[in-house]
Image (cartoon, rainbow, N blue to C red; front, side, top):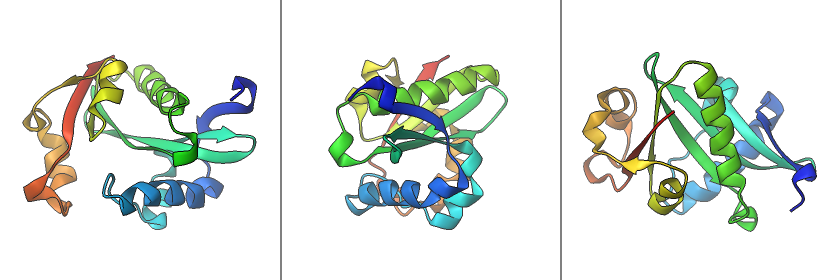
Length: 155
């Protein structure tokens, strides 16, 4: 992939269908919770997309919990574009925006421990983020059998 053809930008409303398709691919595999198109539209200003030759091929979102704590979530890249550094570019864009906002700590809940370890995240107990548990986890179908790993990075 040539870098000139690939870039990461804030998502637009017109990208909601592509974001929904990308996240649905992972939801079908049980890797990610499904995000409805309505939910994506409602939160579109928190999403970033990777675009390659005019096609949205990856996404991620940020969620703020406090003035100093945020989460990177819904990180996904179409399977045919995996292992090309696109996920890393999406996370770097999200981290850059979080730094600009003054966020000092970012966390993820993931099944991709190795990916996040390579980019500076370290494992931590989920209980370290009660804000996440109160806001999202209590509504999750995996609540009593969560297989995700909490990881954190200081920005």
